[in-house]
Length: 242
Image (tube, rainbow, N blue to C red; front, side):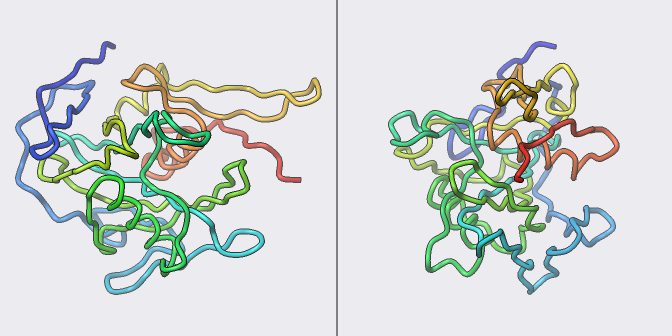
């Protein structure tokens, strides 16, 4: 399979969308189904009903310290996940990395959902309401002393969304179709050893515009298992917490 850059663009950003399948003409925007409806997926405990907030999971030692927004969208009618490339001019370990929009919890945030929505607005100029949120996935340790909560949301057709990325934080915005992520030839795994013995295995997603690895790949892995359980088999084995 060869990837090509399609002419489909976000009408505000001029965002180039990458496809691995031909895309039909976009259809008018459609209200995203709620995960409790017959059209959507139910995430289990913590999923809000209209007018309610999702139950916020707790990490060991207290509230979660950071959150990211895992944004499901559609491009030309095909489901995809929205990613960002962090600016290479940032300081810290994650500059130039593929990521989901998100960051550390602010004292003014009501919960991790508020953190993820606020950070997404700051990074992409995208204001999402809580009704777009499907739920909060299980917390993941980042390996740098933070526990991150992935917040799953449905953005809807990307062609009708206006993005205005903060160029000081975001170098690029792109999507990867679920069909690409679900193909075995685009899935890789890195095995780690510690003191001469096998330690753990982490996923990596290949053959796209950028390589998806690290914490973003772990969250992508868990998201695929949630959204497409019959089509995706998770083979990740995270490090032991003992």
